[in-house]
Length: 294
Image 1 (cartoon, rainbow, N blue to C red):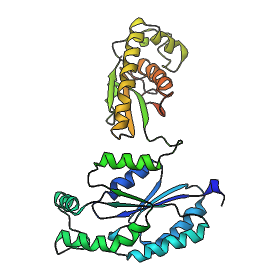
Image 2: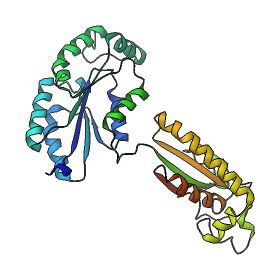
Image 3: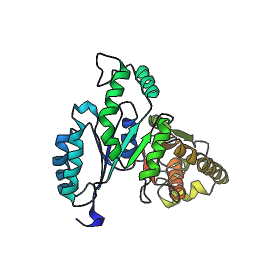
Image 4: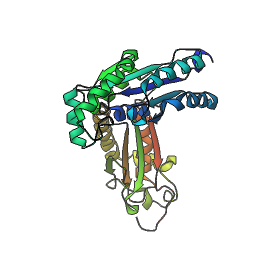
């Protein structure tokens, strides 16, 4: 396996309640193939299967005490994988937090600690901390989440693992027709039924906003240009804020009456303009539907 073909492997472990679930979700957003609660004894075989598949390039595995496995198995596992790949293993990310924070989190969730099913949470935390000490010492990255919100933890992971070819924020642009109902997954809905309707021109009625005559008709209206520049400016102002807040997918829905003309044309134009800054996917939900009334 050449350097360019090496599979990136991250093992996520640490204290129960320190944020491993949030960390795994962050790695998923970074394009990693993620496995939660992998028994260490299966890890070597899993790694062989990943290598044989040839289409998985980034893997993140969460291993914690829910597996009821001793952590000396993890240390042996990392050695076995390093021998298999004849290269560096990758990284072990260890998440920790102070005792007070962990106790507070357990009280909030009303869960029992895996090492103190019938006892005090603090006793389970102390036992776990002692058991995990060798793994923490071997980790390449240790993150203390005591004062981190889930958003802060995501940002720390993005900062450490995001590469230039990874974009965690993308936009779904959708045109739709109000007569067929609002899209339930939309974050932002814009109604463009106030614009002149090409439907009432017999030569344009059979076409859609993807056809040049309809597109040009919609865009040549004075009110269209004024509206479009203001709406584009609003999106360009707000999109960085959504990204900072940790949102990975924003769906912007543009609706007209039937979803074939005005909304389609505007979604196409927005897709081109926003695509210069962000990954954008444009869909037209109702473009193939036809009803008599507009």
